[in-house]
Length: 196
Image (cartoon, rainbow, N blue to C red; front, side, top):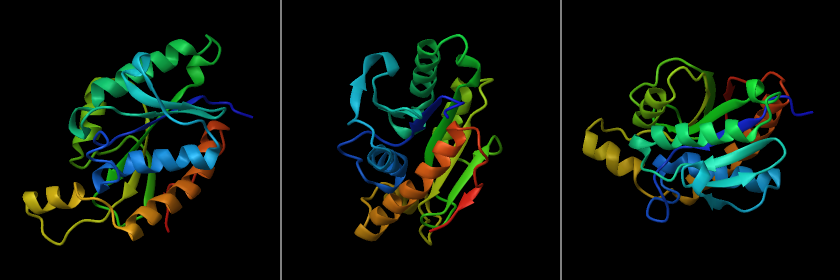
């Protein structure tokens, strides 16, 4: 039974230019989650900050329409609309889950966290700024990192298209994550870390 209505928001850069890039891993996984959960195709929603949405029984899946580093206002707008759509009885139980890439974790490693440091992730920084006072869960999906710490090399790495192996890793993550998110909606404990 669904006890906690979920808004699952993915951060990334907008398609088609950035579709299936490492930095947009959140969007790639959200697309795969919709398929895993049997949800309808994504459609644009003006009322949800112009994001793409797919609505199902356990959650509303929402894909940010903005560039990663300035995603906070859109996430906050989608959250406000999501809350308005709920009945007065269900609104206090609503949960926000933000799905994002994690440069500091190996490919495919998933961390589910509540609060804590954003570790330099500009998309999460933006969300924290515009969601002041809103406690939300973060699902970080490892994309690995290049050997070089040079900012240009890191930017080139995260903005490149995924290899077939990396893409398959994201699909595998979505399959495991779907189970955890349904558990979250049902009020059951979730695993803090998932590995391939």
